[in-house]
Figure (cartoon, one colour):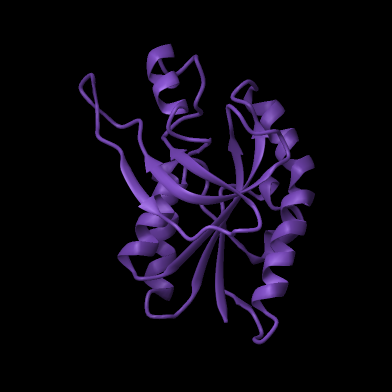
Length: 194
């Protein structure tokens, strides 16, 4: 069984770093990383496993989530918000399910208007900056996509606090991912694609 692990930055995955393809932060970086990866592996059969951290307005910091739906948003044409795109993904029934909003920037009151932020919060549980790109590539190339995220903040911290938190929380996320991989690899040896 071949698995392609993806995360934004090494701080999110701790001891798994040797097995992970890093996209960098944001959709532009993720797009570049996915183009390079798919040029190399597009003809192989593999599971794309997206792991990392998310901000959430209503989930407890340290909670592992199984992403079930991804909303691609925060793209603007002049002053008009573009329509969102929804992608259904397979969710782990043993873990809290979440709908994720993937944007080009940290989601906070400093970036979005209060009305827009409240509107988005009513539809989603968590936020990141790369998932919409990864799910798009998975669908375009016919790859199975699974995503586990750990809540790193409640949309209330700066980048330095976030960085320290994801380092601290990476142990929890890695333990969960190891359990998932152990279950997947019961009958087959796992090969990590890089």
